[in-house]
Image (cartoon, rainbow, N blue to C red; front, side):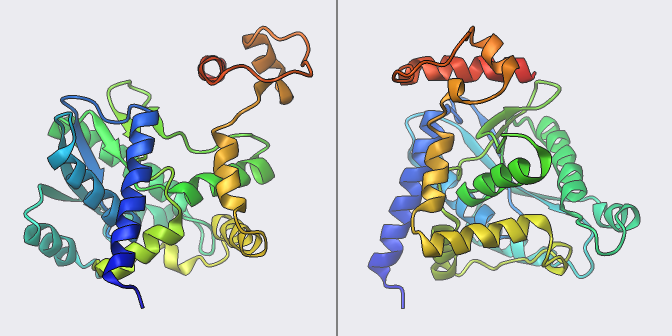
Length: 283
């Protein structure tokens, strides 16, 4: 049984991790208007709660607008989020865009729908951000989403790539941020349970128990159960890159490397510069 003290500790820990991620990557700045994408899942509820709390007490002034996209799923309980947001007196918009029919028409039965579904939703969110005057879009991806993406790209795509905590869209007018980047899913789930958020399930995702993301996520969870701290170590690795120890010749050229040396890596400030250079190479 989770006590009030346990709930408070969870909330403080999640708040610290969100605050650290925001500070590390300058996710939120003075005058920002943040579109907070709320799906009705545990992650977006926690993200919204923490961001609205920061909105009230942060030293910089910014606004948070919760937005939900009703994607036309059969029986979608629109009233759940409406009631939750109204009860908390939160700024909230819901829009209807039938991406469900598009996904069902284009993706064969039994194939993974998440990729197309997320791309369609992302495009809708960008359009809404422009219409609503928001320069930032906050998504609820957490630590485990990020390291699972790292493993998926490593195992199946031949790329050493995860989810960036901060990303500008192709048009250059909207910045995507992931405030939960440092937050473990277990903590989010535990906090969501004690808070009793009214969860809205995704009928598309729930029917795909064997898609690659779930399989890799389960493998990481099993490994972490056998060797506690594995997932935390993977996040630490993403924050502690050694560029000269990788085999990307384009990266070596961008960093002006001729040979790796047996000596300490550059100072953290220099690593930041190196990472920026590698991003420019990747375009």
